Image (tube, rainbow, N blue to C red; front, side):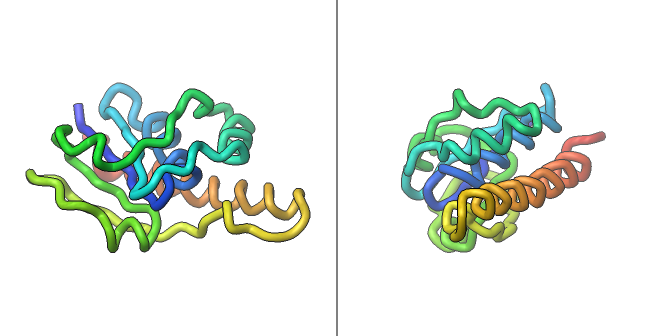
Length: 139
């Protein structure tokens, strides 16, 4: 079983969504964790848009990356430029990947426009996660 860490700035939206999808697509082939350089709590809108796609992340917690320094990760995926630039050193033979997704928590407009941005980013992360698992964990 592979260990995957998804890292973002606040561990509230993008990394939480990615953890949900990566675990969904990986099944029992991986254990997926998410963390942030900081912790901002899981965003309720991230929980909402994932529930719309039948993935429950309501039990997720917002964790600091320092909590995971003892886990031998096989893959590290940073999902924002800030996390990529400020990621701490992890020893071992871990492969690093980076994809800068827009931050849906910064969306502006009326409530409908904001939730639409969460859905748009969710779908981007879903496609990335599906492709990542297909490329790296499907033997």
